[in-house]
Image (tube, rainbow, N blue to C red):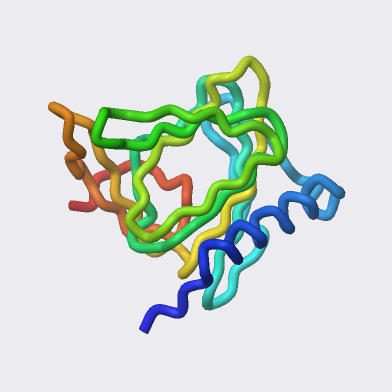
Length: 160
């Protein structure tokens, strides 16, 4: 049986740790021009917490979290989240202070389309073990690759 933290509690964890980061408890937030910087700040058997920084134009690919539920809180700046829907890809701007929770089958692409940097805090339960990456082709989602990883920012070499 998977010991999954409920979505509402994941949102609360991401908010709590965002406040901790904002308060200086984790003073090592860094921005990298070549790739999104990220740092794990907590992990136990049930939950995994990460800080991720985003410069303008940095993004993920369309992905899920391999069966983990999750949440993220935008600490500063703003991020755009693209989510597949029946009508295509739906984009939503997530501004500082916004939190999003999602279940184990959620697919999205998170990007910094703004003109300034952004920082977000992400919580996963159970901790990540796999990520799947997708493309949107002919009005449908097609899984392109899967990676065994405990890192929300994996190098994208194909594992399947």
